[in-house]
Structure formats: C-alpha cells, structure tokens
Image (cartoon, rainbow, N blue to C red; front, side):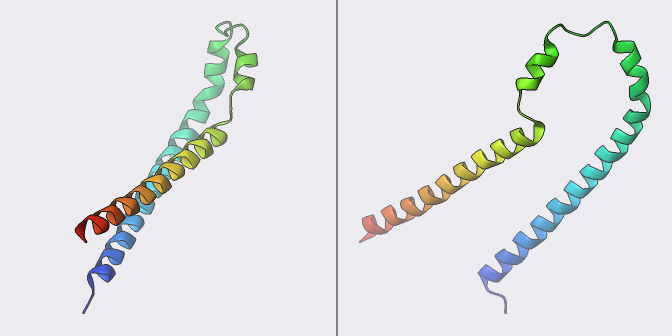
Amino acid sequence: MNTVQEIGQKVQEQTLEAVRKTQDAAVDAVTAWTETANKVTPQLADFAKGYEMPGMNEVTKQLPSVGEIIDSNFDFAQQVLTSQREFAHRIVEATKKAAK
C-alpha cells in the first residue's frame, strides 16, 4: 500500500514531467518561429535603416545580457523560496511551543 508521502512524491514527479514536456513544446515552437522569422529578418534590416536611435548602441552595451538577467532573477527567486521555507518551519515551531 502506498503511503501519503509516496503518493505525494509520485504526484510531484508527474507534475515535473508535465512541466518538462510543456517546456519542450514551447522551445520547439519558439525554434520554429525563430527559423521562420530569420528568413524575413534580412528584409527588415534594410527597411529599418534610417530609423536608428542615436546613442542607442552605447546604452545597450551597458545593459546585462539576457542570460545574466535570467540568472539574476532565478537567483533572487531561490533566495525568496529559501526564506519562505525557513519561515514555514519557524511558524510550525511556534505553533508547537504554543500547543504545549
């Protein structure tokens, strides 16, 4: 017989697998869209000439890369999640003390 913890673990595994499959489908869709867009991009570059903003290249060089932004945000999210875990444990401990 499965314990509640085993059932919970199985549900978590199934959820993570569903998330991974959804992510894979999203990556496939973005890849297909990008390949299609790349066929049109050379034409857009010619169209955009003359519409460039002066000094914009210097500004964009100072910005973090997309990868750096992603990592920074996920690092922050991990810190928040760790803090929430510690908070939840402290709340449980506080209720144990009050129940005595």
